[in-house]
Image (cartoon, rainbow, N blue to C red; front, side, top):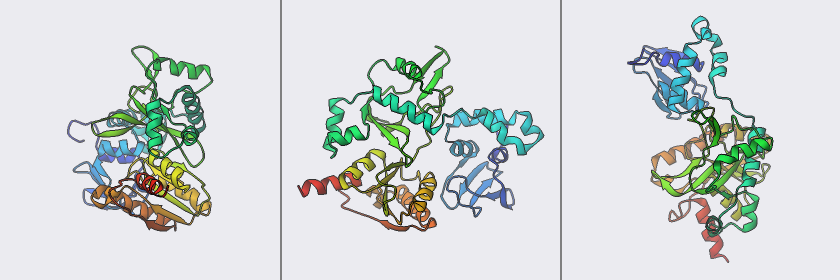
Length: 355
């Protein structure tokens, strides 16, 4: 066992069904559950209880291995691991761990249920004049603002929203952002901040998540997910890939940031996909698979220009290029005047200059 813990990283590997491709003393190599590489590049060290993928660079301790795999917090991961290890299924037969995992994993609504709940929720929200002016200053029109569903976070009455949604036949449990508060025995929604509400629409046309651009950044963070991952009966949206444009275009541009992608699409009429951050490339697998089937030929990387100075952003760019190449896409990388950090800022500048 590891220090004060009642388990070690070998238990976590068992729970996640990570099979040894090869062993090397006190460690083993497995296929990475994060980047999807199947050449056994992830090392799991039993002595130090740590892991590292030599392909994508993901690393951490044994709780982080589970937390990152399941897109949950470390505290939830610790709770889940203990619950699984204490089930008869685990002690009697490790091959049945998957069924134990299903029992303790938080319930998640279906994509269609999440879309319905978010659609009704967004219809209940309004957009403040300040937020509308902010979006217009970035290059959007009133029509585009309405089309993509931008709203403002509510200032009062949030305690009523879950029950209004229930009355309108919407699912609450398992929808990111909603949770059941034990002390008050009430359903609540976790939107206690002030900012612009950004619906995240995936390639299938469903709203899979909501991001909030904060009016006042918190601890250097400008964006927050509408998420209840750390709450009772809550869940995470899992950082879906946003998609804005025509999924049958020959070329798709990939950037970091949903608002940035919407603005860039509206300014250029090109098709954009968006990840939450430069290193959130894992969910691109599903998107690239669909795009390949749709006849898309080229992926263009248009991440922020701090890729020139930030090694982590550049690392995400390289992973994107490698992943797109694995799907046999032609890949290009675009750079522009670094005075404009994002592709949206650069396109807006060009547009203003030519009008």
